[in-house]
Length: 164
Image (cartoon, rainbow, N blue to C red):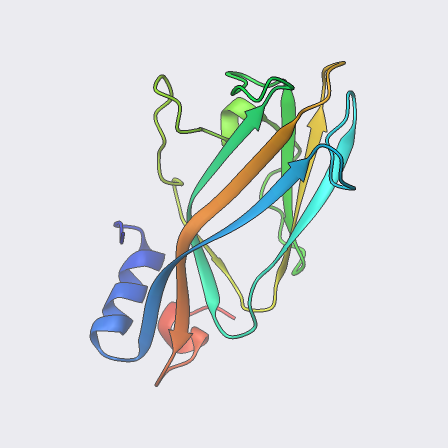
């Protein structure tokens, strides 16, 4: 879904001109009990997402879901999240509380688009760091980055987005 941000409008315009092809896509990361990615009690664990080498990615929405040991959704996990990108551009000035960044698809929580979608260059690595500020391990945590891939046909990233 294209919104009204400059990034989305530039992508839509380029697609209509045949300069790029855009395809909806979701990247995700999971922290799972019983694996090396488990989010234990009072633990801080990194997961990486490798963006494909064939297309840039525009993140329009971030959602997250955390599950208890009984495999029920935690309504308001006491976690912090930080996201960094291999280019060195920070997403936040410091780790943010889960609730401020991670809406989920629960009935009581409204999922919104990012205030300004982010263009992530192909081959970038995102590092997602979750800190569990409780004394209870998480059973499963999932974060999804929803948006679209941009495949360049006739123009480059710089020509389409005026960015490196």
